[in-house]
Image 1 (spheres, each protein chain N blue to C red):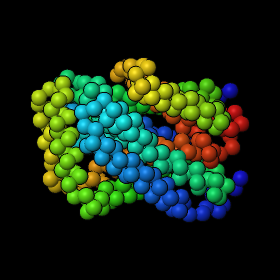
Image 2 (cartoon, each protein chain N blue to C red):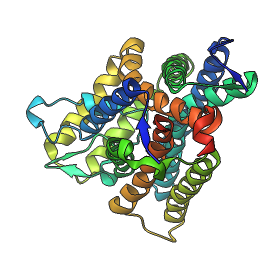
Image 3 (cartoon, each protein chain N blue to C red):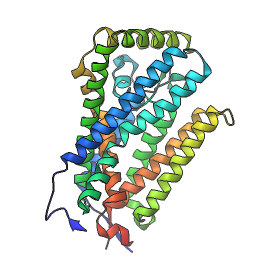
Length: 187
Length: 149
């Protein structure tokens, strides 16, 4: 395998591919879950599908770094340092959030009422939950505020820290699984 | 065989980030006077945050579900001990690939069997499956930080 220090091809194609691909997938899955939740509100089936689906969305959001490293290492037949893996993973996490948020905002042009209906559905769900009243009110207020004052910038900024960290870790994991330098393999 | 920690700068970065994420994932139960829902917004896209499936601190559910909290907390705890794990965690990429596949299989089985009513998972069982994933990921990444003399 070539060492990346000697020839270091650009990783942006891999970052872009993983960010756009997984951002699009998580957007589509989340959209499907929202429509399913609205149509099956209150049913046990609705709860099951939304739980399973949300785990899948979480996986898509966290695995960007791993996929980007896999693509980069396989395309150029490279081994990578752990720091470069972290960097590629972090950039992928940021890109993934931007793609997902922008697509979600664009969908509001196609179905402007979706967010409003989702808010009402979520508030009904919260009201039925056995949680303290004070927290319930905070939850409802926060949900309403997000819908009444949607901001792409705020959505992106609030999601980047955790998504960035998770993808930074999955980028490092990608190095450990697909592009590790020699020594670890031999032990 | 002696084993040394390498990439110390990145090790510390992950340690600090891991600790910050664990504290944030606790939600507002530890510091209710600060109030607000900002911790919950941070994790909104990566966790369903269903209070029925979350641990509570006081009157407040954590900002993540019990499975996610199992992942974050065990990752941080395992990361702390990576430097003293020595050759125990120095395994091949193939070993960690298989380990992660098994752990993800256990999580998938927990979710699917619960959905089909063959098994009822609890906050504790969900926490345990998250814990397995956190340990596996921490040791897989951590193995890259150790070098044999």
